[in-house]
Length: 247
Image (cartoon, rainbow, N blue to C red; front, side, top):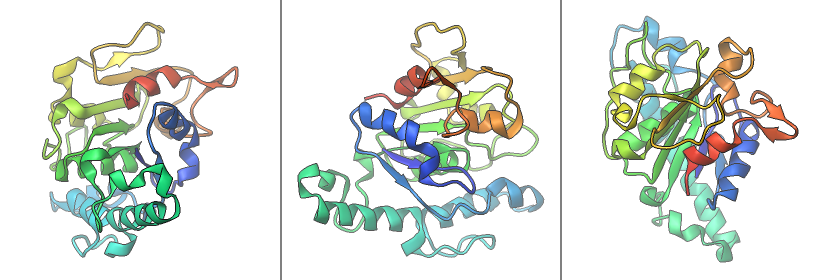
């Protein structure tokens, strides 16, 4: 399970959900990547409809596709994940990290991807490029202007059946549900509230209005350490996370 933080975040922002993924049986990596510039901080002012995809392409794979970031392969998500997996294979041969690596590239078909905000958008973009095991988007993808889906938002290599999403009802990014719709995930059911505490089944999309959080606090609450509500020492959304992460 590859977990990607939101803009300005670090892997330490996702230790609760990383622990939950490990308890579900995953090998878990929280990967630091170049996340200092948000797609939604620059692309709304750029008339190029390919701006958002170009930024994500460069952050995911390196290269020179966007004028707003400068990411070589070694510091891209692809490059850093490959280098880390190679290290883990060498250093911990008994932990079976080799199953996630094809010599010089990740074996994406064995890897689930997820993340918050910008990280969740990268998860969806990776799944558009490569067949992955599962995609879990928290407060994401946020790309899009005035509530419209982002131009790049469509299914690619990974089928819609493998996508899952979770957002707060008071999340300030208005394109999240339109993006879910553009990805075809709503065919498995409309976004379903988890607030009644009922068993979750069927839908791939969850929402909450828990607590009085608003704005960016609500946005991060569905994922981040220090943002997600804790009740009696347990994350409020633990059951939702287990459902979304799957086996």
